[in-house]
Length: 424
Ligand code: BGC
Image (cartoon, rainbow, N blue to C red; front, top):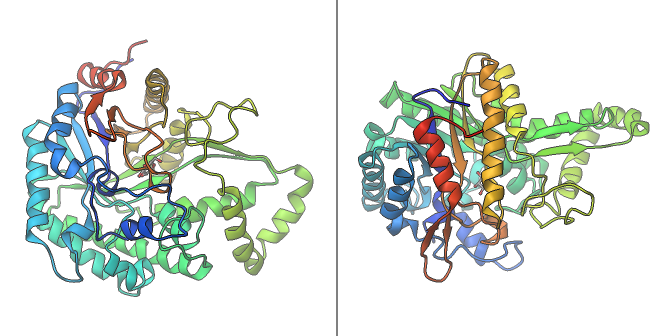
C-alpha cells in the first residue's frame, strides 16, 4: 500500500504539554488551584523548551518529514501588550532547528492554553478577544513566518468552548454557562478568521487552517437530533467558518455509539425542537455523558476494546471524519493533524497506526485529497486533566531523568514515511 511523494508524515506536540514551566498560562494556574479536576501539575513536563534539539533530531532521524508544534502565547505575551523578544527569538531558533533538520514546520498559534491576563479579562468571551489574539498572531508570524509553510490557527476550539466554558471536561476557565459557551464560540470563530487573515496578509502562499477534534458519531435513530446538536457545538460551529481555509485539519481518536431506545424518539425530537429546552438540556446531558471521559473506563467489561483514555479503540474512525470533512468542503485539502492512542503496549500503537493508515489510504483511493498524516504524539506528555498517566508517545519520556526512549512505533512510522509504503 503506497502513499504519494510529498505526503506530510509527522508527529505533533503542544507547548504546554511538553515545554515545562509555563507559569503564565491559564492551565498552569488551573493546575495549582484546589478543587479543579487535574490529576497532577504539568511542572517540568518534558523540558522540551530546552531539549527540543534532541527531540527534533529523533523525529528527523526516524524519517518523518513534518513536525507540528505550538507557540505558547503566555511566553510570547506574558503581560497584556508586552511582547517578549527573547521568547520570539526562542521560537525562531527552534523553527530554524526544525528546518535545518530537513523537517517541515507546521505551527499552531494556539493549542488550548491562553495567558493568565487574557483569562482574567474574560478569555474568549471578551468582546475584543479576537483582536487581542490577532495582535499576538501578528507578532509570531512576523517573527517566524518566513520559515513556516503550514499554520494551524486554533486547535480543537470546540473542546475549549464546551470543555472549558460549558464545563463539560473540567477545563479552565471552569464556567458552566450556556451564554459563556456561546460567547467563547463566537470569540474563537472570530479569532480563527483573524489569524487566517494575519498569516495570509504577511505570507499569501502559506497553508492555513484550523484543526478540528472530530468523532465518528453513531447515534441510534432516537438519539439523532440530540447528537446533531452536540456535534454542532463541538465541531460544526467551527467547521462552518473554515470555508476560506487552505485545508481542514482533522483529528480523530475514536467512534462513539449513542444508543438511545427508539421509544424515546418522540420525546427527544420534541425536546430538541424547543430552543429553551434544548439550550438547558444539552449542556447537562454533555456534562453527564462526559463525566467519566478520560478514566480508564469499564475495562472491557462490556466487550468493547478500549484505549487507556477509556474510549473505544477504533483507529478507522479517521476515515469517517475525513469523509465528513470532504462532504462539507468538496475538493479542499485535508490533513490528518492528529490521530493516536494512549497505551502502555507499543505493538498496539503500531496496530493503531497501521489500521488508521489503511483507512486513510482507502479514502484517498476514493478521491479525497488527503495531504498528510501527523501522529499524536511525538512524546509522552502532559495529558491535561489526566496528567502524565496516559502515554501517547512514539518516544517514551522518563519522568525522573527526562531520558528519551524512542519506541518501535517511531521506527515503524518513520519507515512508512521514508518508503511511502505501508507494509501489508
Ligand atoms: C488534543 C491534544 C491531546 C490529544 C489526546 C487532542 O484532543 O489536541 O492536546 O493531548 O487529543 O487526548
